Image (cartoon, rainbow, N blue to C red):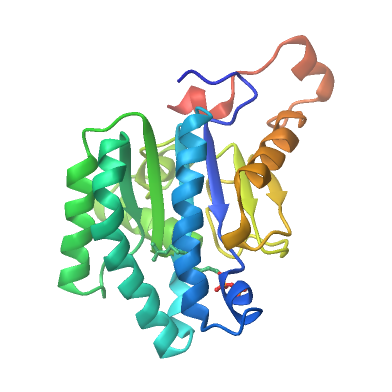
Amino acid sequence: MTAPVSVPHHVAIVMDGNGRWATRRFLPRVAGHKQGVNALRRCVHACAERGIQVLTVFAFSSENWNRPADEVSGLLELLVLALSREVPQLRADGVQLHFIGERRGLSARLIAGLEQAEGATAGNSRMVLNVCFNYGGRWDIAQAAQALVARGEPVTEANLDRAMALAHVPDPDLVIRTGGEQRISNFLLWQSAYSELFFSDKLWPEFDEAALAEALTAYASRERRFGQTSAQVVREPLAPLQSQIA
Ligand code: FPP
């Protein structure tokens, strides 16, 4: 589907609020994460229907290892379960899956599962879904810089950009955070330099199509200037930075 210009090409989401959703229902936090997977499935579908071509979600941060052991193991199990349950449908729906983040330290079984899921969907082109797992924005910048140094390349903006974990997609146009908090929490620090931000009070398991529509409507009303003045943008609309890079 070709999207109108006001539809973002790339949407990124901090899926916050699973724990509170569960706690309010006297359920274990992991029950909230399970509902979070359902919300993610709905969101992928809704984004694909609206012509959004890249969706990037924050599933597990480098800092999430510090959560209680049962929640960490619950999240890891959920990922393994989601891989076996969701990948066939994602494959059938034309979604190309990427896992973004540090793989060192993950179990061999999990790494094999991630690689298998990526391989199974590699030929798809309707939409890219990046799942950030064991990911942190600072980790990404550091690993990119280390890669350049190891290759003897100068640490320039353009070289860093190419060495980042999301180099296969343009920068996000819109970053959404659910759960009522208004911070970035080490998500896409490099790539969100010119992203529009939208904060939703909805807890992630409650983030439905109407909530997505609200975020997209807000996005469509924003004026993106990429460092230019408003008058310049009105007179000679600048091609979005990402299309210059891509
Ligand atoms: C933040 O909510 C959410 C997470 C740390 C996990 C997000 C994971 C999913 C939505 C499920 C998809 C995950 C996999 C593994 C496929 P929170 O727990 O910090 O909520 P709170 O702020 O209410 O405590």
